[in-house]
Image (cartoon, rainbow, N blue to C red; front, side):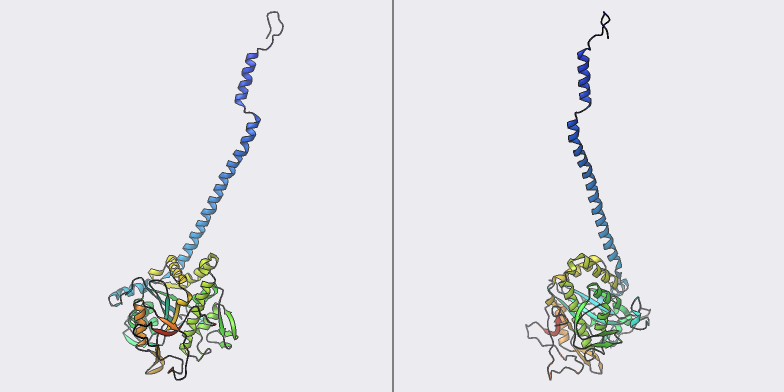
Length: 412
């Protein structure tokens, strides 16, 4: 720009100031920009941190659900027994105390299935090698497990055969009920014998028993002398030792090589071992430790067949919770009072009135006490160790029977 004389003119100060002010408005100063940059980065990482935590939580929830579904799907439901029992609902006993629970535990000696054939030839049949009636008190203060001898002579009702057709009612040894008519026939036979309503049942085979023991890292036993029993697949030195699943199975099945060879001692040994197993689970905190609990649940759910009322993981955990809350000294084991059968010393019959008193106490959810049996000279015990009677209670006393509790263990 020039003036009228042609010389350059001075810049107009007003437009210059306006341009500077406009630039200041459009561009913040460096100090403010430096202050806002870290805040923006923090917001950025916070968003990614929240996203990461969300992914971890969703992944954990998904894994937990997967484990739950896997365990739940492991369980086999026995709808056949439930259908058969419904046909005879009118003749079955009613529950006297609704909150109390009676669960029939059946150990099957089937040779079919993975890992079972080495115990004998699979003939396409199975018998109840072990049957225990487990009574859980309504107030959840005690559990009483009553063994029913497989050789006990009982009246087995007419039952539907597993291969078709029906059996006729007959007097026979107890374990024939399972071979002739399976679980439903066994339950009806027990109910007819005891007058106790069976609310639920579980069937477990050889393989399942072994896996349960292995899942808790074995169970400790004490042997007074070495054992070498080819029938039970058992060879052990004398002394205190921890048995794995395979050894434990031989221990509870052995008959000829331990004690006097009677089925009485074998049932006592089974009760002692189950007591030690319960004690091991509770003392090691298995039920409260997820890393220990999962293998136990996996082994249990893979190995059992149950009725529809006990065929979910939630149902089984509720049962485990109940057992966990019961002190080990209140988890009792005994055998129904019996003696050699009058017409065949190799079979058993009930001792009355002791057996009826035991059944009445359980049926009415009344207390039962057990004491460790101590053989005495002239006590009337038979040569194979079978007791002739239980202790007769007074009019108001709690009836007492030979047995043991889980606190005693195998080595007591």
